[in-house]
Amino acid sequence: MPLERKDIERALQKKGFVKEAGDHNFYVYWTENGKKTSLGTKTSHGTSHKTLSDGLVSLMAKQCGLSAKEFKLFVSCTISQPQFEDIVRDNNRLVD
Image (cartoon, rainbow, N blue to C red):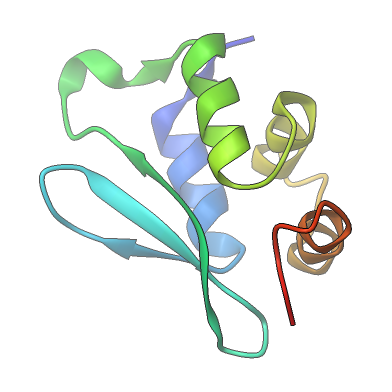
């Protein structure tokens, strides 16, 4: 199921990802303890990319340390920031 870019961006920012502008919108994850991580993803500014395909959603999920299913739950706000940290920590994508 494709996702809307605005919904993805809103969820990322709500759950600890900080937007860094450039030729794309780049989002870097900061832990609840205020530590910058290597987890991050980007979205396009372009109007032709308002809806993101399943393939693109899967790539973004991988960059964020999640499965596509987990990423969709993350965007729909079923997964909280603490739960997100637990998942990526369990997947060895987040180190204390």
